[in-house]
Length: 416
Ligand SMILES: Nc1ncnc2c1ncn2[C@@H]1O[C@H](COP(=O)(O)OP(=O)(O)O)[C@@H](O)[C@H]1O
Ligand SMILES: [Mg+2]
Image (cartoon, rainbow, N blue to C red; front, side, top):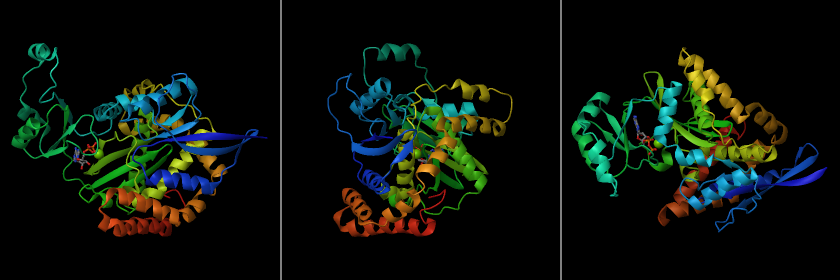
């Protein structure tokens, strides 16, 4: 038997708490996984940012990436390493670079999901360029924004077609506020979307590889209370529906780690924001759900590294469209999309792998999340975000919520 080391790279930015806990938990697990004739051990390393030759060898088997969406040197290094060295990375960087929120709306509509009525409007202003004036003079049609607003109906939301973190999102109650918001929207290209107001439920379904967690979300609460801690707010059927559509969209776009927002109105879950690849992973937002994220990250990264999972660089949407184009109701199409998505995530193989090789994860995590190392990681994150007179209070709050997770769920079972 040969001993082989698999290398996992962390491509990090301002992250503090989750890498500490990911590295700590992995160390406690002390893995030595027999695969074929080999015994695999795992090494985690934080990746440096530095100049690189395009022929530079990549030593990593898997990279967990937090930078691609804004730090282009790392993104280009990752793209090179996929092409040249078969690196596996969470998430497909080409797809992340080019698929905005608006594209996810289009995809979901084509597949038959109930996205609220959505329009795109040309921007209010432009950055000058030599072709701008001739282009606008010849082709930009005057339009009546008020008419579009009336067609969609109020309330509606104006939001950047490629947005995130609520930046530039405005709730609009009537024609006049629509015109005002547009006048202030600058050069950003906006979507107008029918408001699901009032809504009876707001769920963020976080997908990490072949694992999903539906979280009850309160958008009006302060940041540390938005992820609610109740876990029985959905019927089994609703939960499965939200997991299914998240799984399908994540497979469709090649996203391993993404969080999908849906709003409930009159018995229907409407997707409103499914383009959050690489979402918030901080203990200060996730608290009670944070251990789940760390465990899910460990499971999926170890599975991908140990099994040499192939990066799917071709998205192959035709498979989905062939189902979408059939003359039958969405309820009959969804299981077919799910079948493709389950294959994409290799779910049966993944579950078997976890059972066989990561059986001790629940127990180890249950102990690990009671350690001082975790408390220090929380403290470090809190100190980076809060004023100093709140350090103690918020460290205690997040720590207690993690202890609540340990008590309530025992750190064991599918929801853990
Ligand atoms: N169609 C909608 N109906 C009701 N609320 C919405 C709608 N679109 C956005 N919102 C509200 O605005 C917030 C931000 O919009 P979202 O599309 O999630 O953008 P971001 O990518 O910036 O998070 C949502 O969390 C929700 O509270
Ligand atoms: Mg959102």
